[in-house]
Length: 112
Image 1 (cartoon, rainbow, N blue to C red):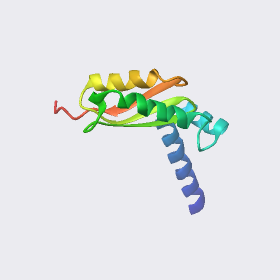
Image 2 (cartoon, rainbow, N blue to C red):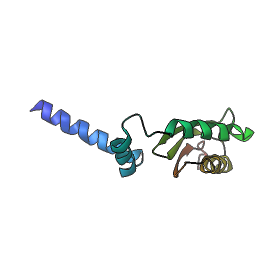
Image 3 (cartoon, helix red, strand yellow):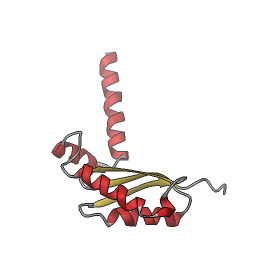
Image 4 (cartoon, rainbow, N blue to C red):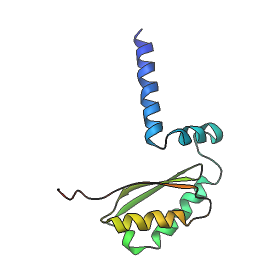
């Protein structure tokens, strides 16, 4: 009985994580390409990282990490301004093969 409950809890957690990481498209990409991603994802990630490095305003102390799954680029990290977030998204969209950009870049808390 405990194993069944644990399996259900684990399944619910994995489903919630998949939705948080891009919903059905992430699940579908894993089915099509496997857990390691699709062919070309690593190349897209590298090209997006190079495109981001071209913008000095995105360099440390800002942090932008890149992951790609089935042509969808996930940007994670933190930058200082909304303009820097926009620059990062634009740079990622400019890379050939990018089909979508998910912007998870945080801004510092402004204390409203």
